[in-house]
Image 1 (tube, rainbow, N blue to C red):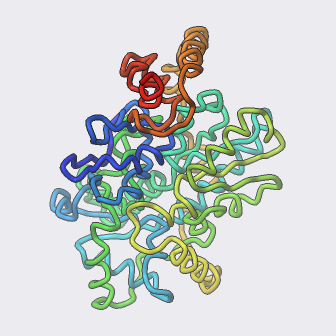
Image 2: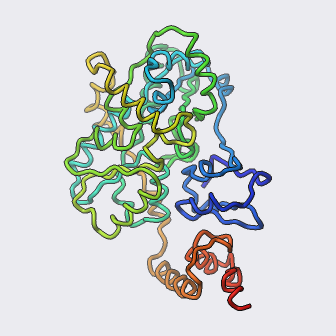
Image 3: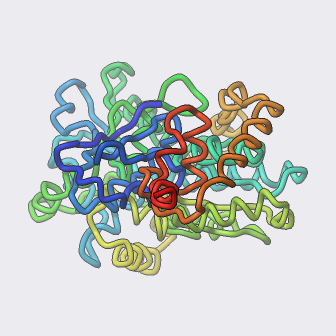
Length: 413
């Protein structure tokens, strides 16, 4: 798996912050530097967030890439509206993007409203597997793939709003200009996090994303603030209040309005709940919304504003915008789009093909347990692994030996 960030080793001090916070234990400290196991990394960006030395650098596309296309569409994440001062008009945010060189702005929230309806249909149609797990956060899909493969069937197979928005935006652009070809159009997603970026570069469930480029909000935030002061209020699209809820934790469950649902954000909290689910304790729940970042997508690594302030700004928009003034031509076509399979995607088909042999996996776990019992179980991290269990796994994989345990060496002396 590719990553959308890299480590600048000359900045890394081997402090172990990233190693300890990584949810999949993908990071080790080797010779005083962090080393990432790409097979375990879910691209959540937690290492970027916690590194005190800014040793992790994001890889995203640049605004200069606009010159590669004849017609450029911006799809701002629903979180973008929470990143500016309270009361900033949506039209001004759209026009700031136009000022940066885009030809058209399509609002992701309308796609999120359509996906909300698709989720309701799918959940109500299949009551055999409960709960259905949201698939909007790519980091969470990859987390389940790596740590909880037994829950793959619970993932709801519905296309992400960003992808639906891209398809609708392309259709809209070509209806405006009949001479536009698909290859003339560049679709740019303004992303709140590295996980969304990877879902475009290496999508799960399909060969190619409908989005051409991904730009980090941090990359253009300063330029957008400048442009905000320079343009009028002509709107390109207003947000859907239903879809706008998706930017904050609990927004999906609120929008779907299921009788029994749970919304969880933050990696540690999500892992706790998934472990409960594996034990069969949540069979009464219809829908489980899980998001990698604390507070939801407003807490994404690429965002600029404090997530609590952004959350408040989003809620202010939800309270002050009037629903009767908000329209989108595609929401009336939901039944037609759904019948055509617009929202369908096989998320875990490719993952299932890579499932390990159960017998071999159990035998390996038994061997790891034997090694683990020999270790001190202090989880001190001195060996360069985050926990003693992780060290036992490394020993089984031939990456380390039991002599790497500093505590055992001291006891021998």
